[in-house]
Length: 93
Image (tube, rainbow, N blue to C red):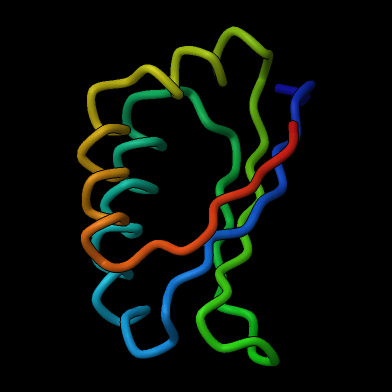
């Protein structure tokens, strides 16, 4: 399947709280692969900017991405991220 939508973004946490956020992020990615039709979801902490997590996603179409953003596992992830001190969230598709 050829992806038609690419998403690139960042999440910023206080550096000392990243380790607390990672299990929640891992669960998000797992659920996204399992339920939402995501082709690729890559996540990494920036080695030069502590607390900055970069992510990229590939989706088969805009409709799949739109459904993902409304999926049942998204709000629990957002709540967990806030509880881990999320400072910034930006992405572009």
